[in-house]
Image 1 (tube, rainbow, N blue to C red):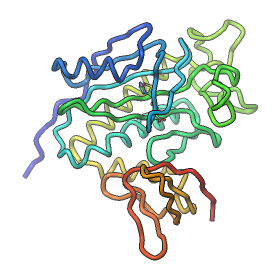
Image 2: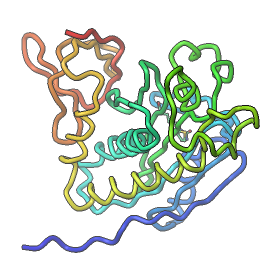
Image 3: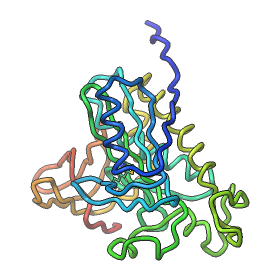
Length: 270
Ligand code: BTN
């Protein structure tokens, strides 16, 4: 039987200056029944948050802070793969401007061994709230001290010696003297285009192709990792793949594991 033709994913952008968290604005809109594809984008978040209640620094004008309301027709059991759709879209957007991102299970994007973006998926009734935070124009001193050693931005990566990224001449969001600065609008357009494509693929073919594309870009592939579970228990094993909706599969003793939620706190290449 021929698969039904699905409507293309289109976005309706709501641009806001200053919010607590775009997740909260999107939640309120979703509760009022707004259409799928409504996307809240803020210049600044005063209470941006990440997984497990962590703070997400969202200084004004430096990043892309956004939440998409997505009403999926896929079974609810496949929802965890939406986080991977967000990560994949960010990876593809960064690849399109010349960077080499990696996905760090379950929701981070890293470049050059540091975190550049995070994805946060919540739900409001039937709607998924897909939050994406990408550091774009930050200099090292723009990050709070506690993450300065582990965070990076498109600008920091673009300014590494020998590196040029596409769009770096378009300095609409940068100081005039800063010729290597990326164009935030161009990166936003690249994310939205990759996100539309990724979500269309997810809606038509399910999680498998998304999971496969994330595993190809996964930084933990083949590494011996320690994962902290939500219970704070720690498990250790070799990352050998992802399960059907993105669970991390570990070869471990005495039995293999499939972890649906946790944080990789340590990894060693084999
Ligand atoms: C993480 O790394 O733990 C996820 C970070 C997600 C940050 C984004 S920024 C836009 C949206 N609003 C929030 O408050 N958080 C997400």
